[in-house]
Length: 273
Picture 1: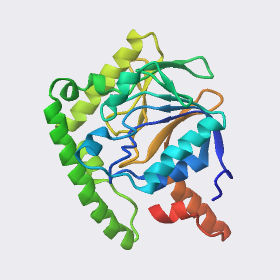
Picture 2: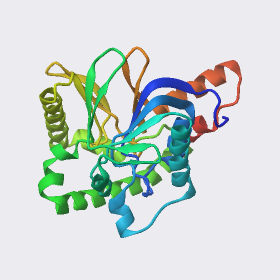
Picture 3: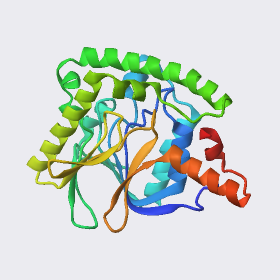
Picture 4: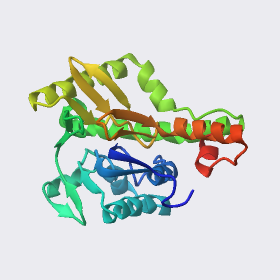
């Protein structure tokens, strides 16, 4: 696919939890997604760069640099970009209210959609009690999570050889463990309550790597997911409709359509087949 061909234009694009600087980041898929989608406004909803991992050991391959360059190119071509830092890139919270190269750094933002609905955009770690009150435990959990991603890489290498689709060990574990399910539910309720307190119609957040679009107590709860496990994003269409995109599923659907008409599959579709 060409750098600027066959792109889908949306009003707003919300991305979070890329974790650039870690081996778990799906940078190649993310770059392909950024080639496929363009937006008038882009929100980076935290944990874009993983400062925690970079402190313990530098890892920054060319593909991660390509993602940054692609985002900067979108800004140069007219997209507005707002960076809302998370806990892994909390060093950027020292620069709240400042603008660098056309990128505004904000603690949170009230986004007004095309249909007039107002959404509180926030990373969400402020409502994670482990991160707020026991950071050492959060670091420990982050290490276990990184190990799970390491194991997951080998599991999916074997699955690809068997012709099976991508599967996330850590995502499966989070949804199967009762405490994790309870945590996700509580997190969603707290963020929805904060949106109500802010006078918004809904919330758009990240942090827990679990994409969602649901109604909670009369408000819309939207979570962008991540680009480590699920490779998801939220887009706002020009009528104000919000949609969660699961990019590997989009690539598989595209590959299936290409097979039906006898066209070669795009590279991205082969990567997730």
